[in-house]
Image (cartoon, rainbow over all chains, first blue to last red; front, side, top):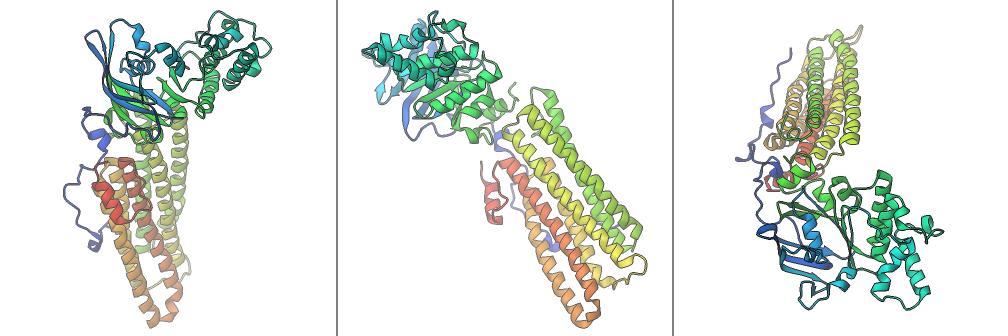
Length: 294
Length: 241
């Protein structure tokens, strides 16, 4: 048998200290969280959160989170249950105000306006920063009235025809118009789950928000309805800024341009979605998205 | 099992990835055996072994297809991301390089048949010196490249990448030596051409070993260095991220 003798001319001196040290900085690095990894800023921020702490009573639920939400981007917030991603989302239109024991510290601005300014009226704020929830929650009213409700109470229209236009335009944008145009008077709760969720999105965009917050908007939907909503999210991005909380990593990868990973109330890592799902920089992010989080 | 393949909450995912990982080792073992047996057939003028090598390439081809099938199934089932995705993409590329290494070993075995089968006119054994020497060298490069993959050893990967430069130098030196033979005896031109093709096959095996090592850098660091210079690869390996 031939003996294998390497040509000594090819043997080279290796730099010292590389053995075993170069492997997977992500996997071998400490899982300690020392601030957020990645760029928290957006090129054209619509909302900026700085040093946000949220307490439920004495419990610190969000710990010093700073993050920009850029104009016309979809940012996905992912993380295990209880990591604070929904709490942070709800801070962005002061939905946490409805919880007595909840206290928010830090600064959150929408277009340079501090939304926690004591003089700020939360009703118009929630029109500017709309929200879509996990479970479709249409009002027990007609499809038309579900969409018309917001423009009516915010006084956005002066005539019936104007309102008709807003309803049609909103349903068109929500990709629901063709399915419901002949039955606008029927009750919204009679629609399928996916249609109900798109109706809720139509209701949200009817008041011309700047930002749309979505808290697990597809978790109650089947895969086809989910695909429709995801397609809708992509279309809506041209006009709106969208922050979405999702438990589905694949959904975050599909719909968002940036992804933020939360862990135990802290923002561990934020970056371009393409980077987060191919080469995350923090070990905790990697563990979570690859299904190694114990 | 290594750090890339274990640790999933779903243990069957570990099993799938480990199986794929082991398949790479199996294909490497087979490819290296083919290289050595092809060279052995040349040294010992053993046509039977050469035919065995040629037929043996089919086994590598079959494992190549099997690996691809498992990769497709795993992607469809698991939707891998991050290091799992890099592991799977790397395996696909490493397997492809190993399959081509098998093809080059087959080319080497064909030389034995050309030189020694039936009424063939055998060459002067001195003409084969460089072939034999390079065989051992590139075979070790393949072993080390796959070992770097198996152990996620960037130092080893870098070493293999550097050794590819030595293979190219050896290839050029061998060509110069062969040229002098031709000048001394132009009747051996036919053998020279065959030997050059054999050297070229070995040089390509070294190139594939280098490719595998570059894939290892991608696997570990997340940076594609296939078209980077040696200095850039060194800098990437030394960098923290």
